[in-house]
Length: 346
Image (cartoon, rainbow, N blue to C red; front, side):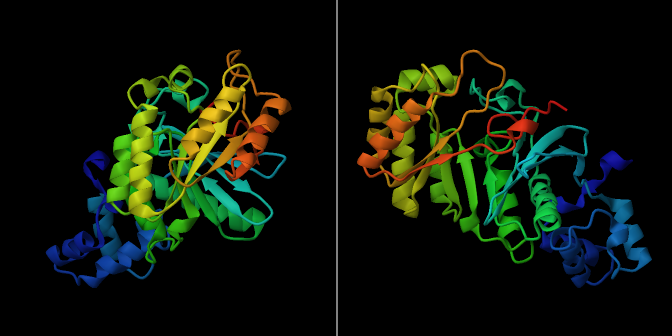
């Protein structure tokens, strides 16, 4: 019987009001339930204490709340926390709390596994089992916000969609989750504090621009030379740099928001002068900044972190070209919680 019940969080507030009307109750009960589900994060109908027992039993008979369960928590020596998140169907994803001196950031997953095939990423080795629903994405953020308050004595300040999966391959659900996260009736977070990171799906970048989204865009670039990018990210044969460039120009024209390029430098792959020169050219198309990310090995011989000399070459040449650059040291490596390491090893 359980399986035939609908997840109540799939209903809009209007649909909840209609449900109560259809059973001869007052429509405002729908508002109360909606508040319990989203603002107050109720996991069960029994927690909805301002509803009568009869009303709660009625909800129980018709609906389920497919809430996530934080199944395992690993804490890094640098303060990073990795959650193993069990979904209602038994599948597991991972999400991460990254603390710094001034902020706490939630790195959330959007798919179980991944639709793409980046060779340097552990998640890409898991086949995509399914997309996450909006409430499953939302729940990860709520769980990390609680941990931020508990362990760091402050609310969550930022969210990055850089966990498991390609967010733009689960576009509708990611946008619905962000809508709830930013709504005053949800978590009320500013969209300016949210970054959606994509490996580069041109058609969907254009759709985001058309949909006039308010959050920020990051692109996992790693090479501005087509042949090199295809070697490390084979899907790039379908999503070429030319198409990506055109979609990013479209994005900027529509949103006037600069882009962040996420970029890992590997030894023998993209550590030469021509690699930096190609990146500088690519950066000239739209206003942007570059995040050089430390590589986190996933037991592969092919990918090795480039030496400091190569990193210095990038920094020197990009600064000379007046392109904003930051070098981001990885957090949570000791618990496999760093960029590219999320693979459900537990």
